[in-house]
Amino acid sequence: EGATKEEVIAQCEAAANLIQEKGVEVASQTIGDKEGPFVWKDTYVFLMDLDGKMIAHPIKPELTGEEYALVES
Image: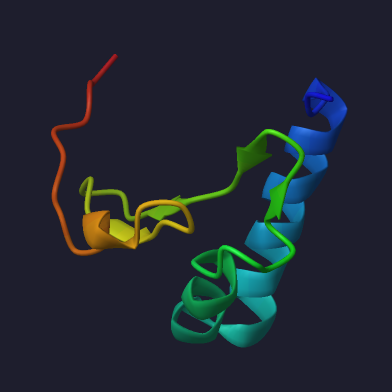
C-alpha cells in the first residue's frame, strides 16, 4: 500500500512542527530513525538544509552530511 498525497503532506507538516518545537538536533534524530514515525508504508521524510546539505535520512544514513546541488527556479 502506497502513501497518499495527503499522508505525505501531513507527515511533512508534522516534521516541520517537530523542528519548531524541539529544534533541528532533536528532530533530526527522530526523522533519521528508520524505525521512527516518519517512515511509513512505501515512503519517508528526510531533512535537508537550504544549502543542500543532508541533515537526516532514515533509509540511507550514510548520506547525512553530504551536500547536493539544489536546482534554482
